[in-house]
Picture 1: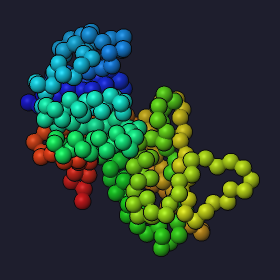
Picture 2: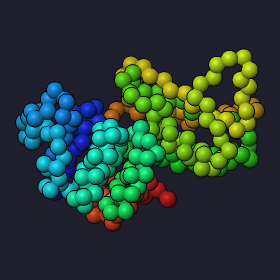
Picture 3: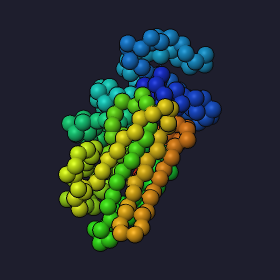
Picture 4: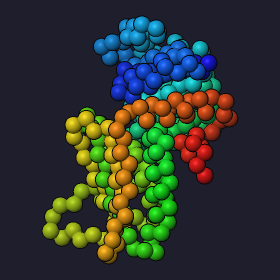
Length: 259
């Protein structure tokens, strides 16, 4: 039985992970952690689960794995507690600064950490397909554009997933310059630029498109998330996978087994 603590337990993802965990006989939720300023802190939200607490240290000793879907700043505090108590962590929070990423990487020398901007199995296959085409982009002179769409309440833009796509492109095409808006009269597209566009509307769970366009034809890769279940299922798979792994920084490629 995997003893699980969920950080950001009353957020969209936290609630979904809790819901799916309750139907999984291999998982026991031992901790639900939320911001101390949340209106439901110290309340028993689920009849069969512990009350929601503001402090991870209260439950860390009885925890096998922590799943974090909170905020970048809160993640830093969670990583600190996990590192000090030698507990694995799965991080799905996005919007980290480079300094925050550096701190996570440092902690991964002591504990196993799965860090991924998108826990969906399908999205990670999507990443791999993008890699395959980007490798050819320079030879074929593709123009590349990224379009990401999410619900109106999403706080960060571009999304963490879009940033991962940008990272893939930059790895293979280091001369790339990303453009986040186009406005004006003298803005002819350069050969090295990639446009990144963020749409926020309604309750859209998530959609990412990458366009590869050359003279006379277009390749369009699209991943659409119809439910947050896919992210929760991926995060729980990562938690089960990482629990007995040695210290290191892992991603969903490792969890899924993608080379």
